[in-house]
Image 1: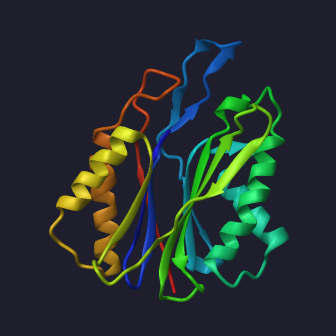
Image 2: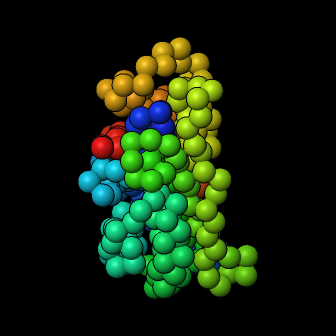
Image 3: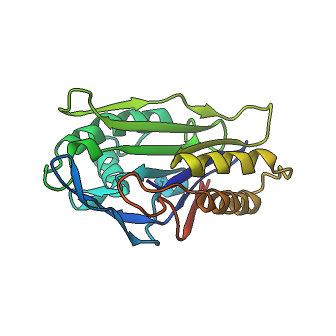
Length: 232
């Protein structure tokens, strides 16, 4: 399941995730015959694009068809949009193509109902160090059970009314604790070093409150904390 934090200030943005990756649960029909178990606590679910102008992260299904979600995102941009001009364009190109790739997974690799992914992009609206945005994409199995639906959810944009703007995705208990901690933090320095430190503290607090994996008995988040900052 994992936990993810996206955070933007006036001049910078970042993605932070935990490092826990699970081996998939095994099913016979609707009956679970083997729990999902932690495979590693050092799996990096963040990525960087365009020499750091855009950073991203993902939770849910983290790899399929022999590639990580980050690898799929990079492949899509290289083939469909090698020279993007804005963050909205990147999200709009990745969305339908990644949904198609999720549909094409071999059934024996990942069951249709488990093809659940959230991908979050962070960067300047026009790929400059200004007008920072967080854009979340949500991928889910369609209600009919045939295919994948995707949605570009409401973007979070930097506003002058406060210094930091966050977005969380992943385990419900972990994200709730992360939101509580961040809201109670009094320091609002926005230099890059502080943002990275704050993200690590927030993720540590979130991981400590993580719930149980929906297809197993182990905590859904844990391990190493990865932080990727924008670079302009």
